[in-house]
Image (cartoon, rainbow, N blue to C red; front, side, top):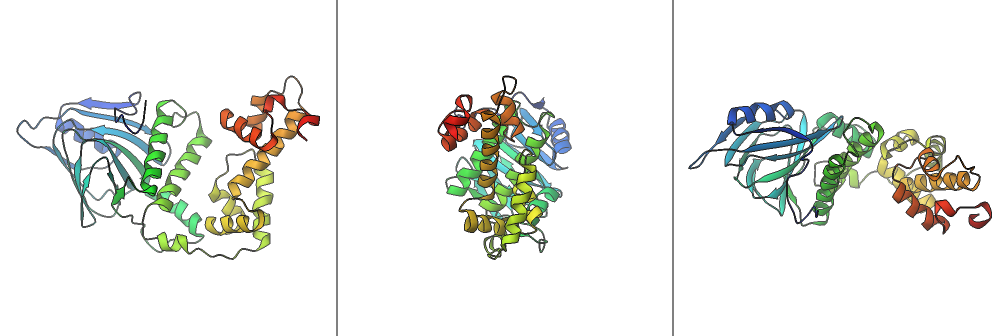
Length: 332
């Protein structure tokens, strides 16, 4: 299925509820989001609501359709940010003093401390990404390397045809697909869930205009070699763990942006690329020394890789042979 040209129902294997009753819809949606006013309008004033929902610790991904013309007044969201990407149809969103026609070219980002009013058309279907406010603020602090000066607010309009909009839509659709296929948000992949949640918050902060954008872009350039060294030592000691940029920056005692610049200056690569290469080097060593009971899969997982296909491709690019064909004399 093409995620971009076939805006069909998402997360169908994670149904939360189905109803044709407005009051029931309002109550059920409120349990996952916040209390709000919901009214059907138009000649028939009917609804056919479908809400699918998959959640991690601080992030949830949702598919929602009302199946009728509805007005929604949640007031202030309070505890979360909400990215709304239309998959079909349209809606009018009023937020932060801006009125937005949301459609397949325009998404919206709702801030928790600003009032919202929405009018969804009967044909409107949306993919919603809910990010906990506290979680996003934690990622933001790590990104700039200090306390944030106040509430984080995003521009409510997101252009899905821009480079950043394309990236964010792809990230959300990938998250939904991973949840659909049981790769995340099923209680079995805690480390991966945490990593996905971190990356989604980081993507929103880095790829959509907000009141921290100038602080993020003008993070300190200077970094001492000892700070990079602390990060390198942390990587070597913990390469098998599902490390995030926030954890590397915390170990180095600097911001994410500062650490990235330090690695570019000293190693001409990003910290995560450096981490990946350390993992590849260790897997190469283990495979060259392996015994029959030490499989490629075992080595990949013990070296910190969670995606075997990507591991094989990266391994071949670095060592010019596949993991299964590794031999001490061939690849060293």
